[in-house]
Each structure stands twice: as C-alpha cells, then as structure tokens.
Length: 330
Image (cartoon, rainbow, N blue to C red; front, top):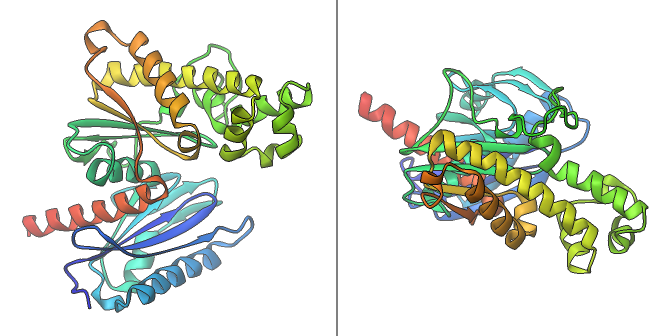
C-alpha cells in the first residue's frame, strides 16, 4: 500500500477524452484509466464522472483514497491559477467552475489546477524530451494550437492566467479568420482543423483520392491518422498542405525563439505524433531560417516523447512541486 507521501494522481480533462493516472514517488505509472467525454453533458454530470474515474483508477492501483498525496488537474481553457477556477472552457461549455475546491472536498488532498498545454510541456520537461532544458517552449498543433513555456523549472505564466498563446500571434495580415475572431492568427493557417478543411477541398477536387476513400468529404473524419495515411498512400496535395502549415508553424516558433531564447522546442500533439518526420524537419528548418542569426544554432527542435501521458504526468509533477514548495515555506 502506498503511503500518503508517494502517490500522485494526474488528470487530463481534454476536449475529447478524460484520463487519470496514478504515479508512485519515482513517477512510475501504477495505473491509468480513460473515458471519452460526451458531446452534450452538464457540469454536474461531468464532475461526477471525473470523481468516479479518479476512484476507479485508485481502485485499479489498489490504493485507498486517503493515501493520495495530491491531484494535478490539466484543464483546457482560461483558468484562475491561484484559486483553481475554470473561468471559461469553451470546449466543455464551462464557466466559473471552482474545480479545485470541489475535488479537495471530495478526496481530502491538495489539488493543483494547470492549463493542459502547460501541463504537457512541464511533463516533457520533467520526464520526457526536454529534460534538463533551461528554457523549453512547447507547441502542440491540434484543433487549435496550444503553447507553453517552462523556464528554470517553473511554468511561465501571467499574474493570474496561463500565457504563451502562440496560436494567436498574427502571421498573415488580413488572413483567414480564427476562432478567436481575429484574422491571420497562426492557428488559422497551421492547426489540424485548417489542414483538414484544405485537405477536404483537395479531395473534392479529385487531388487527394486516398483521403476521399478514407474520409469522404466529412471534415469530422479527417483526423491526424487519416491525414498521415493519405500522405503515405501518395496524396501529394495533402502533403503540400501539411508542409505549408508546418512552415507557418516554424515562422511562429521563430518569433517565440526571438522573444524567449529557449534552448529546446518541443512539438507535440496527435498531428505531430502522426507525422513526426515532416514536422521535425520542416518546423526546424523554417525556424532556423527565420530567427536572428545569433539564435540560429542556440536551440533544438524535438518531438514530444510522452504522447497522451504528457499532460497527466506534468499535472501530477506540478502538484508534487507545489506541495514540496509549500512545505518548505511552512
């Protein structure tokens, strides 16, 4: 039986799935469980499912609830980090949900709430592709484009909110509209949603027959795996679309390099996992060609190693760090 000092839970409340993982003191996984999120579900119902999944994964690990040292929650959206409140999570339809106090009352242990991308970058810093980096910037293209930064062991943040919204830097003047309402954001030309929409057009025009066979013209079916499969099967039009988007991503990352001088850039998310060679090559080459000359050889671009476990690992590790720091102060 694990003692209260060496059992941590990481929970990822993603847009399409929720996942809970139990770690021991050395951050070896003891158990993990996941469930799909439901398209239409009330806040109370979802919170009850979160509680149940945490209890289920503890049961699988053979650990009593009272033995848990802490829970790290990785949550998408705008957060009040100090108070552990989800201010606005559009993908969940949540506003002003005090998730930290809800879970602390339920499980009787401390809870840390962190942005899901920040958690993923922190997980890669502690246990993945960015170990021992002084400054690491993580970029995760998906439905949108998330970004995070860990500097000297701390997640870079604003006074109350998470930061590094790299998906919303301006890339194309008067370009396509972004989900934020602005035009020309990086997200509007380099996200998986943009790639899928352009690929569907190519399939409709007869330029991507393999994608047409895989997904038809239904954009919801054009996931990362379908994009990779169509390229592997020979759809050159789809490959051109992906490479162009990866170039835009490299330009956005070059801006981050010029601002923050990171020694490591971590690329993650399902799209990068499905196409690591294209993204590693194109993003790295483009970023190097766009940064200030002094920075050209000062950073490396790497592909994330932890996959779906990045956010749960990072959230749990961040909870561990927060608790250790609070104990030192006390």
